[in-house]
Length: 200
Ligand SMILES: C[S@@+](CC[C@H](N)C(=O)[O-])C[C@H]1O[C@@H](n2cnc3c(N)ncnc32)[C@H](O)[C@@H]1O
Image (cartoon, rainbow, N blue to C red; front, side):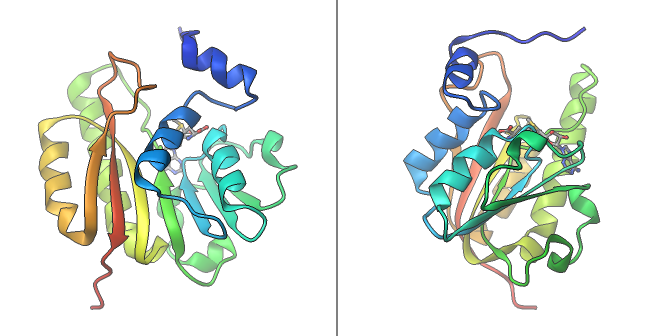
C-alpha cells in the first residue's frame, strides 16, 4: 500500500502547480550553489513526473533547453513546455548523445533518480549505490568540462566512501540535506561544481 504524506511542501507544490514536492529540494540547492544558469542546456536524469523540469526550463529560459530521461512513460503534462524534450528510456542505455538529439555534452546534469525500493535497508542501499556509481561512471559522456552536477544519494557508509573517491573530479564538491527533505529520510544531495574531465 502506498500513500502520500500531505505535508507543508506537498501542499505548497500543489498550490504553485508543480508536479512534485521535489521542486523545493532543487530550488534550495540552486539558490545556495548557483547550479543552473540562463541559456544553459541541462540534462535531468529520472525526471518523472517533472517538477525539476518545470523549474530548470524556466531558469534556463528560451535560449536554453532541458532534456529529461525516465524509464516511466512520457509525462504528457510537460509537453506544452517549449524548451524541453523528454525520452522514455533507461539512462544506462544511452551511450551516445546523439540518442538524445544533441551533439555536445550538457552544461549541467541533475539526477533525482531512485531505484525501486524493497524496504530491506541493506538491499535498498546497495541498489542506490549501484545507481550512483553508474551515473558517475557515465558522467564524461553527459557532462561538459567545467559543468555542474547534482545527484541524490541514500546515506550509508559505502556511499560516503564512494563519494569521497569522486571529489577530485570537481573543483568544488558539497553535500546538502535540503529543508524540504523529510526528517526521517536518509537521502541527501551531492553537488559538484566545475567538472574536471579526464582526457584519456
Ligand atoms: C524521485 S523520482 C524523480 C522526481 C523528479 N525529480 C521530479 O521533480 O518530478 C525518481 C525517478 O527516477 C527514475 N529512474 C530510476 N532509475 C532510472 C533509470 N535507470 N533510468 C531512467 N530513470 C530512472 C524513476 O522511474 C523515477 O521516476
